[in-house]
Image (cartoon, rainbow, N blue to C red; front, side, top):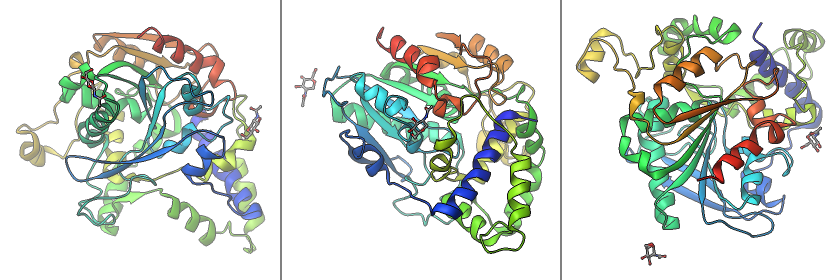
Length: 391
Ligand SMILES: *[C@@H]1O[C@H](CO)[C@@H](O)[C@H](O)[C@H]1NC(C)=O
Ligand SMILES: *[C@@H]1O[C@H](CO)[C@@H](O)[C@H](O)[C@H]1NC(C)=O
């Protein structure tokens, strides 16, 4: 079984139990940052296609020292800016960067908990949810980069992405190559472009994509797995506190999720699950599932032959031209990451003209450990900051 996916189930299981017993103590992004004694600004960024995104800025760290350089930290699928500030300040990437002198911008992709807004579209409409990681790269990132550069009067900034946060960067840098010049350096944590060697349950679930597509069409469903979904799941299912089935439910959940990561801080699990999953569009999930059996290609969304002609003027979706990603990139990857497979990272490395790679020095490090491992600082973040200090 896929350990990463098991970890996700494990977290869900534990969180359901915690949520029922303790009631969710959910802090806002403002509280998460201000309560730790860091400064905060909240910014709303409008994209070319009318989406309104929320970015949380920690302009400097506790000692107020600043090197005048900005960095975007971009979360992955189903996550949010909260991912970078829920651990202890000496463990969380958001705080470590601020204390390292950086002007930190924790961004949120369209559709997630903090960026579910549009100038004209209703956020439950099909129009609103008609996006995948492509639009997050093509629209969200350029709008965010330009906004920050204008605010700071700088010409370049740093970028750190995790998982889908790297995919959307590659989508941007290959389709709007002029943005490469605005990037000092990009750190790719658990990079994703090719998904041919993704293992385990995530791959198995990928085979159900066509079912998802049909069900979504039948139910007129445009997005899934957001916060209100998780809460209503807890309330409505056999797992609710008062259900006779409750003990069975607990045991089954723990059986499925019988997983223990050395790097996972169990205390943090209920906190993590009170912010995750943060919502994704059906199209976004389908786009990723297409990459799972794509014959080693990193392509735009596949609408099917007929509609591909309409969208792209050809039968098949075009490939992202990775040779246009000229910004300096460091690929941070891990042997036990079942989603971002080592062979796929190798392939990405050979396609990127200006990239280096570094494997995490702990064999059991997994996809989620890049955000929440107890030793993420020693194993990854110290390297990231060290590399950034050279640019
Ligand atoms: C686990 O997380 C909690 C809450 O952030 C923290 O207080 C504790 O020190 C962490 N433990 C380890 C071993 O990192
Ligand atoms: C922005 O930078 C330019 C060139 O470095 C400088 O001429 C200008 O005065 C700066 N503007 C502000 C508002 O700091």
